[in-house]
Amino acid sequence: MSEVRVLVGTRKGAFVLTADGARGRWEVSGPHFPGWEIYHLNGSPAAPSRLYASQSSGWFGQKIQRSDNGGKTWEPVGDAFAYDGVPGTHQWYDGTQHPWEFKRVWHLAPSLTDPDTVFAGVEDAALFRTTDGGKTWHELSGLRNHGSGPRWQPGAGGMCLHTILFDPSDAKRIFIAISAAGAFRTGDAGTTWRPINRGLTSQYIPNPTAEVGHCVHRIAMHASRPNVLFMQKHWDVMRSDDAGESWQEVSGNLPTDFGFPIEVHAHEPETVYVVPIKSDSEHFPPDGKLRVYRSRTGGNEWEGLTKGLPQRDCYVNVLRDAMSVDSLDPCGVYFGTTGGQVYASRDAGDTWAPIVRDLPAVLSVEAQTLP
Amino acid sequence: MIRVELAAHLRLLSQVDGEVELQVDAPVTLRAVLDALETRYPVLRGAIRDHVSLQRRAFVRFFACQRDLSHDAPDAPLPDAVAVGKEPLLILGALAGG
Image (cartoon, rainbow over all chains, first blue to last red; front, side, top):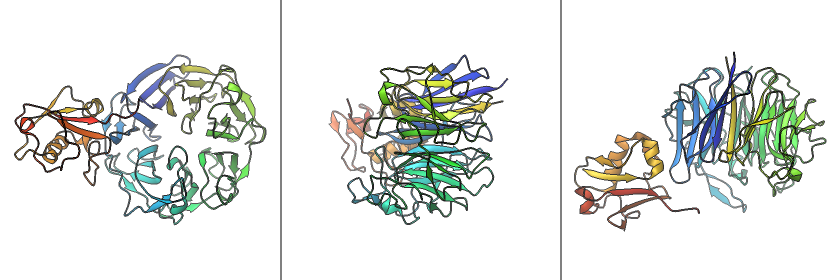
């Protein structure tokens, strides 16, 4: 019988939640690395017992941990993230130029085919890669040196590279997103990059339709259709049908189009999930009601999913890396909140139940489906 | 033997309980002790000093014999009481937050 393993990164440690394919009874393991911020854990699609974790601290810096047994034990690997050459400057909040400084790893994306190859998205924004299981990391500096770097600026959470998507049909094509620079695409495995932000409109930057500078919160893709991308931007939910060459707004009837995560159903490429948040100054759900919104039409037409979720006095947030789907049938959907709850739906969002209620603030959620 | 007392987060990283004891040849300096510490526990590289510059991380503090050594030169001799193992070198996180 299949199993599901949900990897949860929090402000104060990592947790591993496991269940059989029925997804009714969950075992909770953790905290791993107690007291440390775990921005992200992720498993290798090629070898699911191989996990990587980003462990960081404002005091003691960045560590990367690796597990070869699904999170039962961990070993530290390399954590020297040195920018390639002199990293130069980017735009600061006040419009002045500010030196590029490494702060932490936000997102880890193991290769689809090689468990020793992992990409890391970091703050200040850059993309690194290891090909030796995390021992050494090297920057793919063509991204940072694209030429638009001095116009990138940090969002409220920092200037982070938070999304890394691989095209399963073309090993050389990768999509990434940076807050607040926008989305970029490479077609040569990371050597050269181009911004893919045409169609985005951001009223909070001097030129609302600029080539870069957009606060993209998250991008999602279904593996069967790598040319179709969905984006939750600072404001606006967007869709591209041409691999990011152009974007169209699909916010439709959402109660608010601000939010952080966006995910695609494992088996229905036109079914998309978002969690609307009231505004960029009020990071909680509208009306104190925690609602996931699902579109079965690839956007524009959305339905609120509320069964099992708090519908009064709820003022948590759901961060950009804190939603994931499994690949069972029906598809399981998972998300974590800044209030420490991890909710699961085993029926594609129709009903929800908490797996845990009282973890530290959840930063990331990744679901693995195991044979 | 040089005695080193690590902050709780660093003990968790290096998986040690209590103090660490290190053999360090004279002259006993902060740099020599940190070099020995990182050789024994490679996971601590980058957690106390920057990987490349070897500068103290901003929120790390060094204390010994009721003195703040955080801003001393890395090649300055540590107090005699540390060099002979009578007092530990404390490596702590700065007080920050509530």
